Amino acid sequence: QQQVKQSPQSLIVQKGGIPIINCAYENTAFDYFPWYQQFPGKGPALLIAIRPDVSEKKEGRFTISFNKSAKQFSLHIMDSQPGDSATYFCAASIGNTDKLIFGTGTRLQVFP
Amino acid sequence: ETGVTQTPRHLVMGMTNKKSLKCEQHLGHNAMYWYKQSAKKPLELMFVYNFKEQTENNSVPSRFSPECPNSSHLFLHLHTLQPEDSALYLCASSDPKGSGNEQFFGPGTRLTVL
Image (cartoon, rainbow over all chains, first blue to last red; front, side, top):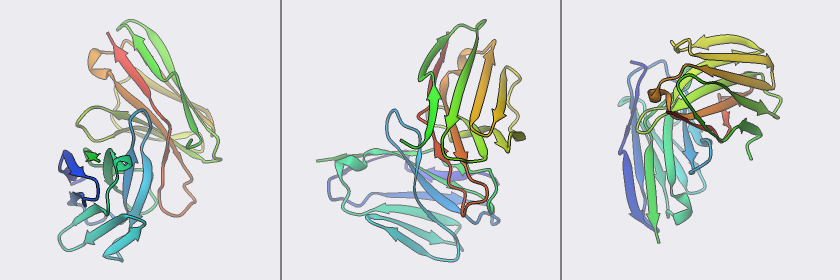
């Protein structure tokens, strides 16, 4: 029940495409859902996060869609660029606790 | 840079060696974490320290021993490791009193156990 399931494992799109990465969870107590972006040789960095009181959050070209009844959330990258090529992790936590539960990651490659 | 540094960046050790990983954060945070990152697996939380006190030990084998002498420094002491312990070890920090639970990660130490 503590798992966060992430798909797909890898994704290849052309520049300008809209890659979508999906995550699902079981624990309805989760109330904070961040996405982290990791480039090779670097640690993960917070990209965007959402709480379940809204169904969508947009920051620049990155959008989180949240479906509370389905217990799913997804990351959309509009007008993807080669510089977006990275590994993306979804995560979930309860309140302001220390414990983030991460998904398995999605390796995104954006070709010119 | 995220304000979290880790040394060394790469480490190769034999199964009988003893080594230590170091993490330092310059963000004024009071919580620090060790994670293990293996290919095709979720990031695994190993240890959490809040105000220098260990608040989480995620069933980590005793061959991994953390130390947090102050809020800015975190160590992971390694001894008699196994080849399956080869992974990227990430340190992170956060401000428990801040909004949300954003964690700031260092670049990691790539550990290879021969």
